[in-house]
Length: 157
Image (cartoon, rainbow, N blue to C red):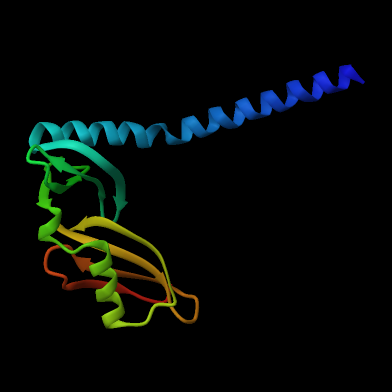
């Protein structure tokens, strides 16, 4: 009986080890992208502290960094992967996530909001809102970060 317990324990440990290895390999490219983007932002902008990082995949990949500058102001840095040229806007100069969602509700009646993320297309910083309509179809709503103008609406996917 003790032999079986040892065998099962070893198998469980090996399986957990394999899962951990696969997970770490899966997130490695994201870590590399984040390190690259933060290095560019700190070199070419006044970014001092990084608070959040994510990738936006639109027409091209854009690194988005939220953080604080050396004056402790909240800033957002967009860096297109190809050009590497950062766009920096103080957070208070643009729409908050809640304000972007409010714009969506002014234009329509989403059933459920699935995700809201910052991005950039055609050099316009934007909010992308991913939501379900009443008939459970996927929709994308794009709002200009600074002006609040609707840039694009993709419906019923």
